[in-house]
Length: 101
Image (cartoon, rainbow, N blue to C red; front, side):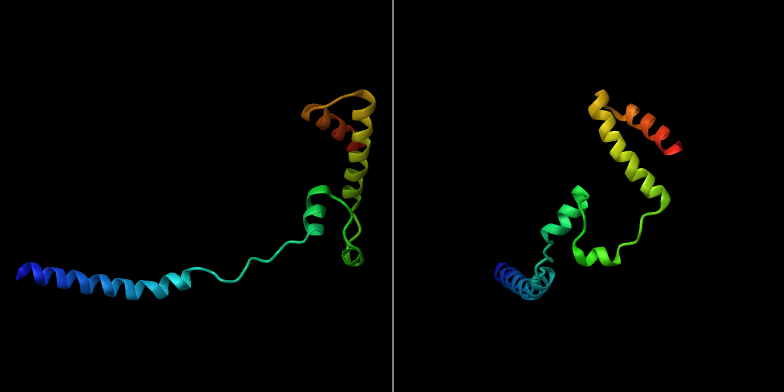
């Protein structure tokens, strides 16, 4: 008799747990897909290429310091090609002198 009572109790407990956990499990999973990123957004961020035409209209002009950094970056590329220098130390030295002058 006690074994029958224990089995009945376990059966009721299991069915109650399954009944209550099913709606919770369904709510935990999102059914909406993640927003898709366009290729132009990825390429602009990684490669530094020009922004699409609609972004160009609202783009702010570069500050003097930003323009200097941009110019020195181009000069660094030329310096690497002509002198064959590379490395973080050479870059820091070059940029320091370029930005001062």
